[in-house]
Length: 380
Image (cartoon, rainbow, N blue to C red):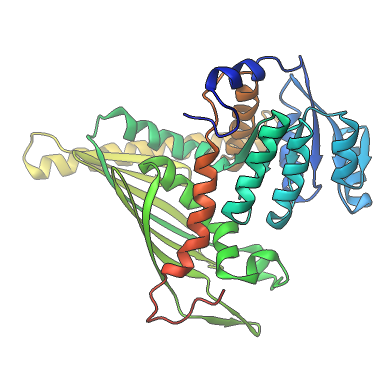
């Protein structure tokens, strides 16, 4: 992969390997997601969280007390100015990502940004420019590409055992806490673009990871709904194409039944992914009469589901009883994504390509413009 941050891969790796023996980390934002970041960082020996920054000092103090973080600050200017940290996790609302990340990167502090990278391509470019000034690195926490079911499915698809991946169909039909609570002051409800940047970027990042860089996209939006007096477009049908495959995404939030599934169609078989239930099954073609092939696939899938569900139940019980650390798919995805960032800083993994992150931001911003004009529903 090619870095957008420095002039050459060798230069970047040399700089990454020159890091401290233990990274001093600041958490910029003390909201819900900061708890998970703090929990993951507590498991990484080469990391020490030294600072929490939040405009609400009481919230920052509570987080600091829970995780024994010694220092609380009120703003990022103080964080960038004293250079008492090496890395910052940007856990702020998306409209604040670019300003905070750019300030810290220009000061030579590496940053991990919660998705999305920023609100626009221009803001993404500003982040990259600041990284060049400060000779620092940035990455975006698209954690769901480390979801256990997704990594398993990606392994099957990339192995070639089922032939070439041709098409991905994904259904993202999920509840949304802020919508249920009618918290319409949230940034994501300001426009269709914001909703896609905040929520649809999760499944889109998975599709991008499976089929490669998305080249073209089309979108049909559902009719506007009136929810508690607020007009909202909450469902989209999205068609995507990369150089090597096609994909379809049905995206809808505010649903009562949680469903997040994908079907990966290959030349010689298919892969079914259930992100909510954390399971993967496959089916393939054998040189048998069709009824025997169907029987083999059915028995194989049933056995695989039973084994995976038993494993998930066992992990749940052991975690609930305090006999092992968290093993739920969300926490695992966060843990592996954050660990990957620190491996990158040590020069132990491939160079991070920020073009991927910028491309997802561009895609989410452009999709409403491609919505079928006959629906006349997308209000931005």
